[in-house]
Length: 275
Image (cartoon, rainbow, N blue to C red):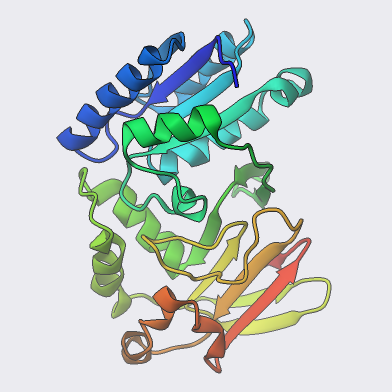
């Protein structure tokens, strides 16, 4: 596989000082293989996306990002905003450096720069599905966001927001779990109505997760039935559990057995409506 023009987008805020050293290792490993690299410092998603759009419009073989799951998320949305002809020619790779690194976990992406570069040069490419979420704002306009991993609503959405704003570069996989336990006993569960092609569900829900891939929250298997290339969205509805019940069953979030619980529903569908 020959790469002549690579864009490397790095998130200097992902992880910590060790991550910044690993970015340098990755850049050196790519350049040692004779790969020409244009690097973008992704200080924020909006400015990085503007730079990506400008550079890929001039022609590039690969777009590589180095960061966390948040970096994957905004990069996917940036790619989907490109014109069809440019997007169809662009190939994407990711070097995991964030807190959870859940998307990379699905593909067993290595964290060592030399091993990653070896896989990049000699590994095989994969096609993956994307999901999209569309909602109406308070002003009445429709918004859409794409996702490559797992979209969480309810409690999971709250915890993901807390982790994103308060992790401060902490890369430990327990960051999500610590934030969840902190908010679990004060969170008020919403009453939801959920509709798919073959399901009508309503009631109080702790969390609803819709996944293209399996892992989220730092190695949790909240949607253990997800497959990244089957054309379906895997959904897990966690019903009206008390905080104490959640603590008792917390191991099932990691071992993929969450579907065995009575107040949990697992489905696979083309489309899902949540109210």
